[in-house]
Every structure is written in structure tokens, then in C-alpha cells.
Length: 298
Image (cartoon, rainbow, N blue to C red; front, side, top):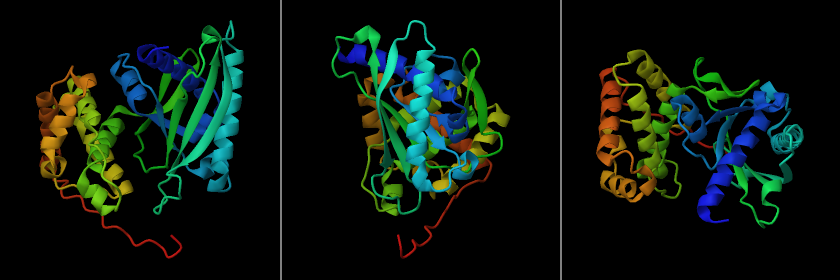
């Protein structure tokens, strides 16, 4: 199986895993989905996604007594969900070979923002001769504060719905996630530098094409979620200058990524300027969130 075929297989298999998880009542309460796959549903296109992103709900809402029980909860419920869903197919094509749940990061996050990476190994009856099919990845990020309209039910298949981030929440998170990839934020949290999340700029341009800046109601909702998202992860922002830290490097990374060629860097930059100019007109900057001291036990 070459790289192209692997990506096609991953996208299709993840679609089945997503529907299986959404069919399980416990997991429906536990997880709120986001990311590229959900954005594609909102925008009505078929952009492939090679992983599945989610946030964990509060442990109280899913009847778990302690955080230490979360990996067991995820592994057991995902296992049951996959078994039930796959056995309902006719003919039966997939079966779960192995499910691993690992904390992310590996050590406890000093501010309690740790999540989990779920790795799923499947057997596929259509590829019995293929050894070592790619593992599927489900990211379960830590719980976050969201607005009352930030989570919506989206249809995945007949009779199957998933709790997902609304489009305005996804836009807000993409703005915040880009800031989190910049040196200023990495230095604030004393963590290693990372590559700029240029794909978030690409996705913001896709969102702006669908929801122009003059749709004030939509972008006002993005503003509200952006402030919440930044506060939840202590992300500071003074406006466009904060976004344009090391902008030359951002441009270089964007233009090197051939998967982003359908939207020019110029359009991505103009998108960001339009959005942040609107935010500035509403007077939300500066956003400043001092780091609270860590406890001695941390």
C-alpha cells in the first residue's frame, strides 16, 4: 500500500471509527469533536482528514470519579463501540485489533491541561494480505470552557449524530491555536519552539469564504469564543502584531506546503487582517492573562 492509498484508507477507516464512537451513548456524552473532519462537515466539502480531534467533557458529566479513570473509560467504551458498530455491517469488513490510550503529554501537565492520545489498530477484510495497516489516531484534549452555543449536533449518517464544535468555535480555536504555535506563547509557558500552524491560516481563509466578515452575527460569536479560548489557555494577544510575530517564517512555511496551494498566502494574510481588524474595532485587545503560580506539588 503506497502513501496515497494509505491516506485514502485512513480517511475511510476514521469515518467508520467516528460513526462507531458517535453511536455509543457514553462516548457521546464524553467527547466533543472538532478539527479538520468537523470543519469539512460545516463547509460541505470532502477534505480528507487523517486523524480525529476532540475535547473531553467534565469527568462529572460522564460519571467518572477521578481523572485516573479516564483512560480505562475510553479504552473500554471505544472497544465496545467499535465491536458493536463493525458487527452491524453487512458484510463485516473491519475488526479492532488493539486500542491504546496514552496520556498527552506523557508526564502530567503542570497546569492540568493534559489529554490523551488514542491509537487504534484495525484489521480490514479487504486488505487481508496487507501487513501493518496504519494506526488510527483519536486526540482527546483536555476540557475547555466554551459558550452556550459553541456545541452543536451534526449528522454523520442516518440515525447517527455527534456533538461537535460549531463553526464559530472552530474559527476561534484556529486563531488561538496559531498564536499558541508562536515563540511568544512558547516562551511564556517555557516550552520548546514549534512550527507555525500555517494550516490554521488556510482553514480561516476557507471559513471567511463561506462566512464573509460582514456577517456580523457570526463573527461576533467568533469574538466571544476567541476570548474564552485564549483565557482557558492563557494566550495573550495585542492584535495583528502578535499574529505576525516571525511572519516571514510563517510565509515560508505556508508556501512550502503543497497541500495549501489552493489558497495563496496573500489571501490567507488578507483573511487574518480582515478578522483581526474587526476584532480590534470591537475593542477586545489587549488580551492579557498572567500565569498563575504553580502549586508546590506541581
